[in-house]
Structure formats: C-alpha cells, structure tokens
Amino acid sequence: MIRGLAATCALALASSPALACDLSSLVGYTLIAAKTVDGSIDKDGQRTSDFNGCDYDRVIVFDDGTGVACSQYGYQYAYRPKAYVFARGSALKLCVGSQVYEARHIR
Image: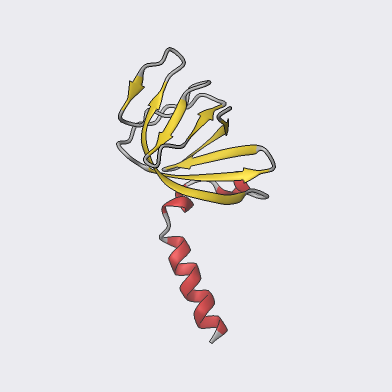
C-alpha cells in the first residue's frame, strides 16, 4: 500500500510544472504559493500584461493582485504562466517554467 502511494506521488510530481525548475537551487526552501502571472510593472512604472522574465526591481504581478519584486535579471517570455513562490526566512525564489529567479517581498 505504501509503495503504491509513493509511486503515485512520484508520478504526480514528475508531471508537475514546478519540476521544470532546477530543484537543487531550492533545497531548504518551502513552497508557499502557486499563482498565475498576470503581468509586471517595471521601475519606470510601465505595466505589461505578459511575463518577460525578471529585471532588477521589476514587480511580477499575480492574478490575485499580489506580487514580488525581482532581485536579478533573466529573460523569458510567457503569457500568464504558472509561478511557484518558495521561501526560506525572508529570502524568496520564483520558479516560472524552467527558470528560477531571486525575488523579494514588496514593501
């Protein structure tokens, strides 16, 4: 029974979009949210309705009205992708597709 449950869990995780990220960079972090990206707001206040990766201080806005600020640069394009937010203390990481970005809470 336990082996069957373990196998079922392994299959479910193997098909999870979160596993597209390099999970070795998330060891010690806890998954705190799974959200859909609604767009972003750049430092200059320009709002987009798609996801163009991270840039320093870019705010990634989720469809529930919350968001996180990027702490690094990385280009990626997607329209309304699923994002996974991981935390360890006050440190945040954002997994979108196969990319992991460092982020921070918005003050």
